[in-house]
Image (cartoon, rainbow, N blue to C red; front, side, top):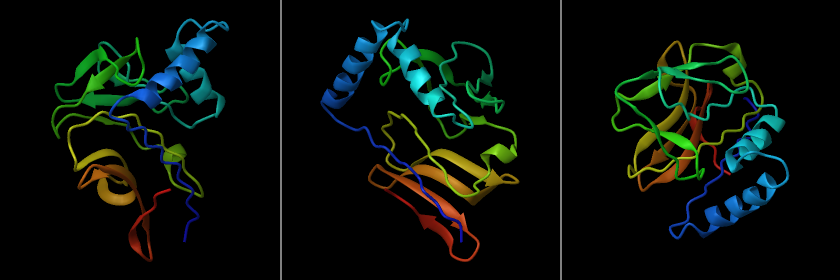
Length: 171
């Protein structure tokens, strides 16, 4: 068995009040020397020394830049790049509008699940049953870990355990 400690944050608030409060705090930080709320948020993420950080904020090209490491991804499908982000005011985002639109990151041992894993994913979706992120072994689905929206739109994190198969790990 592997010890798994996922951190799954859910920032869903129909009125947007929580998001507005968070960005108001970021705006105060902008006045403390950052050029934008996005720059401040990026600094917070990178301060945690993540293995990878894909802001998916490109406006052109086919490469999903990894701002923390060397795990660049490749965009597949007719994605819409550079759309206005709903979670980062003034920031860019990407629209994935079909199952054939995704980002592929080549194998890297740094992304293998060893003892602990934290995942953060900001998503605005109308789908209530969709994959958000998956780490596979050899391209075979359901072989390491995944984050998806289960039926009813509930964010769910799963890990594969050789003895027990797929295990939902939320909290």
